[in-house]
Amino acid sequence: MGNNEIDKTQENLLGREGRYSRQVRFAPFGAEGQRGLAASTVLIVGVGALGTGIAETLARCGVGRIILADRDYVEWSNLQRQQLYTEADAEARTPKAAAAQERLRQINSGIVIEAHIMDARAEELEGLVAGVDVIMDGTDNFDTRLIINDLAQKHGIPWIYGACVGSYGITYTILPGETPCLHCLLGTVPLGGDTCDTAGILPQAVQLVTAHATAEAIKLLGGRRDQLRSRLLSFDIWHNEHQEIGVKAARKADCPSCGSRPVYPYLTAANTERSDVLCGRDTVQIRPACRQPLDLPETARRLARLGTGTVESNPFLVSYAEGPYRMVIFGDGRALVHGTSDIAAARSFYHRYFG
Ligand SMILES: [Zn+2]
Image 1 (cartoon, rainbow, N blue to C red):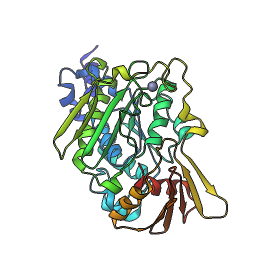
Image 2 (cartoon, rainbow, N blue to C red):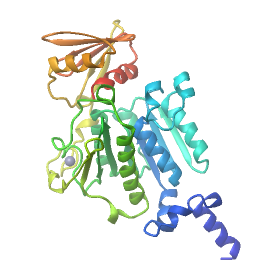
Image 3 (tube, rainbow, N blue to C red):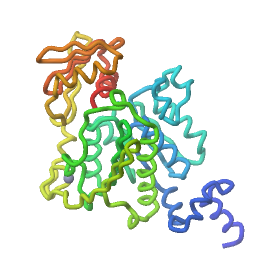
């Protein structure tokens, strides 16, 4: 190679004006790691708090192609922690995927950013996974995580589970064929329950999960699997707690998602959260796939404490009205969202209160 060619290769690797030079100079990552990132595709499901943090970090690091999927639009209450969004986005109610895409392009014009404004269900997500090297969890609900988990197993794609609420965060790196999957870990990880809308959320909890999840992502994509954290990590940044649990033994040989005869239960309609528009009623019915029986009196108290809507209840159901919507929740976790026939809007409203 002539000097010019060397310069050219060097420039490609370090990016324009050496933008990636500081992480290439970090020896354990190095040129090899950077080459891996540049050649990689990452799918980020959900661009709320976690998703925006993950997207910004990976875009700045130089991941070659980033795919974003989200069904929501930006609201003022997002700005406290959803780091890609501005007041103008909240004012205009810009869809999050579109707002994130625009901001990320300003941050790094040298990579490809794709945006999908959509309700991420099994079928929609399966249409996005071709060529994806890692899937990042930026969702706000457990049902979507179980779909991601099955898709990851079916297509042999690593994925990084992450969740936070209040001051608590949790993350785990799932490698098909190597580690237990999320389905194996049901019972180990907290299921649904409180959400950011009910229990609040500290941005620092989000940032810490973002840091751990994206560090794992760049190890994976940069060819350093040997450095991955094999344990389930959880912490509470307010109560100063930090825990790592070895979960290798939790892998189940007969797991329906990752076992020897997988059936990927959450990719079939019967087991996924079902949302149906009820004919002529301006109502959407939501049936969650993975839900323990609801404690209705506690649910009523939890919603009443928010002070943002009107709660009524009887022994069979809880009714919660806020803004244009009224939601009726039954003891089996099923809900009717009145005031809309838009499934995505109804699911959004539901998942504010039920993770
Ligand atoms: Zn499993």
